[in-house]
Image 1 (cartoon, rainbow, N blue to C red):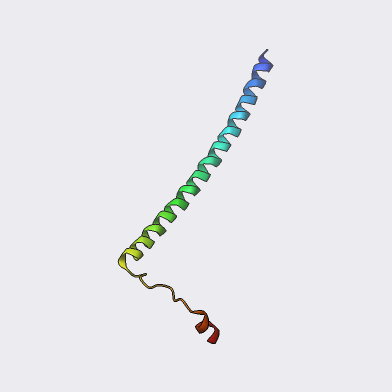
Image 2: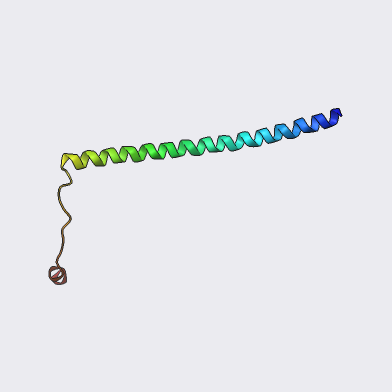
Length: 71
């Protein structure tokens, strides 16, 4: 009876350790995703500031087919 209880306890501890490792891995993945999201938010803010400041009011040059052939 004692041996069965010990074995059950041992199995439960192993399962708990495995579950803890999975949770820690998920926490790490979540931290990585939060960091990526933060970087994207910062990039978006910078782009909005540039756009609002008018620094990117220039339009890309459109080259007509006749001009592009002569180049």
